[in-house]
Image: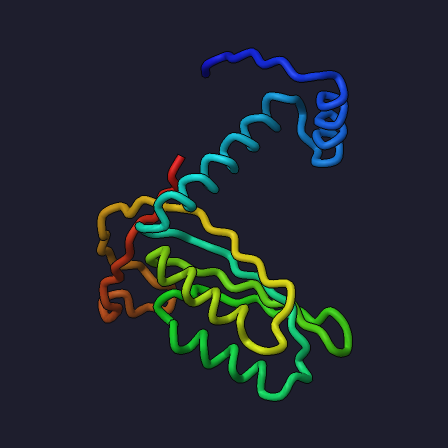
Length: 164
């Protein structure tokens, strides 16, 4: 690990220490590393939104909005290759929070997320994108406890490694 030294004014250092305490960091170094990683990732995504990513799209919507839940579900089914999983939570009588885990080409993930957030009635949408490197395709079988491992087809998957 490389050691660096920075100088900041006292007021900024005090604010930073408050943030560190609020977020539960053990020390300034851990907080600075997270800030640098976050800034580098944002710059990487702004400069080159190509390649692949994993992402979390979260949004709040009023489930009484006419056909909105059905429209959102239809959009997800239309992009089933991008949609990994969806978490749905009821916030109150009217509002729901959904969090959709996505993976795929960054441009496609962004376009899909924009379409979801543009639906009438969707509020407070936020997309968190993490660029990934694609590992090689791997094919393997699994032993299954229900006794028909020989009948199970081989499964293929690609490893996704977050860029550092």
